[in-house]
Image 1 (tube, one colour):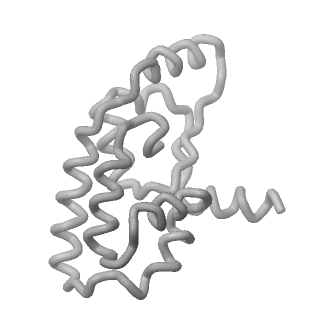
Image 2 (image 1 turned 135 degrees about the vertical axis):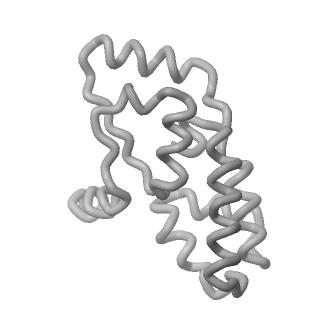
Length: 130
């Protein structure tokens, strides 16, 4: 979803780099070559220390910014055409629900989707494709 349907990557990059001092933009880009959460785990030792309250406040601010991201040109038209032609549309993302649902709802894309599987779905899919 991020960087495919919506221009959210600048927000995600900024948030990650702020919370992981020492991670470079190139390292951040490399994380996206597979499951983001697994890739990010390689740099968990660089994560800043926060209280639960600080983390929640930061996560809410990030989700708010992200929920206002622009949809890429042509995406709505493509989804409309696919839905009209009878395709079943499933969004397979490892983005957290708190970041995905508001973004989809604000853009009015949630009505196009037949299924929005839970984040663990991607892990299951990758595991079963071995």
